[in-house]
Length: 109
Image (cartoon, rainbow, N blue to C red; front, side, top):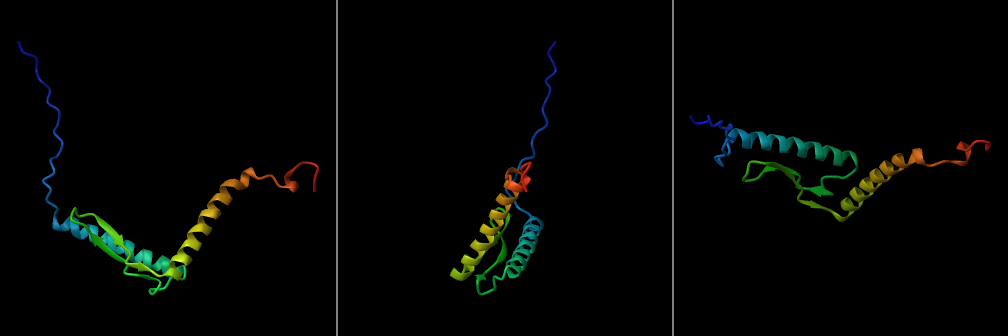
């Protein structure tokens, strides 16, 4: 008598072929992200002259991404200021519960 051999289910095999639907879906997602990025940059005061060439794209593997063509020197400075301010605010909020002010100490006013 031979023991029954249990066969594991096989993993789906990738054929390497990307459907047009997948590419279109990835492109649509990348376009939506590019539009949102443009809107956020506009709200931060970065004009189309400061940040140029924001586009949704897809690569050969069908993955969506957003490309940014160029950022002017003034635009890069403004973006850096915004990012640093955001990061500083995050650190300040994280540290706030740890900081004891003189008014917080018992017996002082």
